[in-house]
Length: 182
Image 1 (cartoon, rainbow, N blue to C red):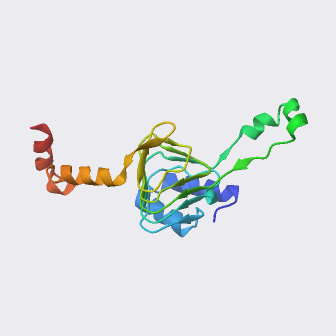
Image 2: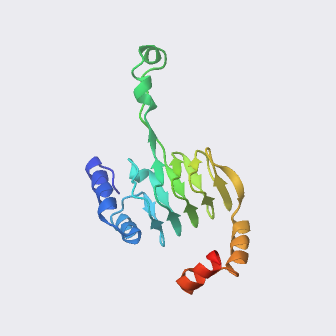
Image 3: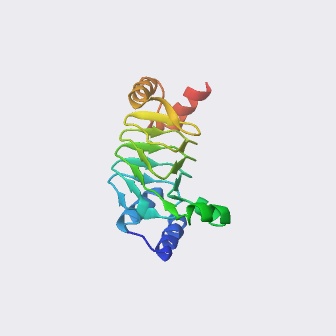
């Protein structure tokens, strides 16, 4: 597990050197960068939390581009520079917290996940969300702060109904262009 600053720097550098998200994910797992990373995961973002040992991912987790995992805050730096606060409350500690992502979770692009949060299992975090509280099993959350907007089962049903009509990536470019542009 990466617990030393020079290890974290190396991991951050590798996220930019390894172009393929699939290869990056394999590298993260092989080198035990996080507390845990399950099987069949996909880590597209190039960001590594400052305390990677505070992030745990289950099996079949998808992390899209530009997702940020915030495992600490720095408010103690403010508190510890105000003599009245120190005199009244004492020195504040640097605060860290864990992030747990359970099995079968999708985290959309540009999302931010804060410390002391559990996500899933079987949950979706919509793109651009800021997750400040636990995400319940089988739910979809969106927004800032993220709030429940639906159930995963409903999106599966809706997508399967749509996909029966529309072409997919493997149907060929001509069929895709005709469907969308004719």
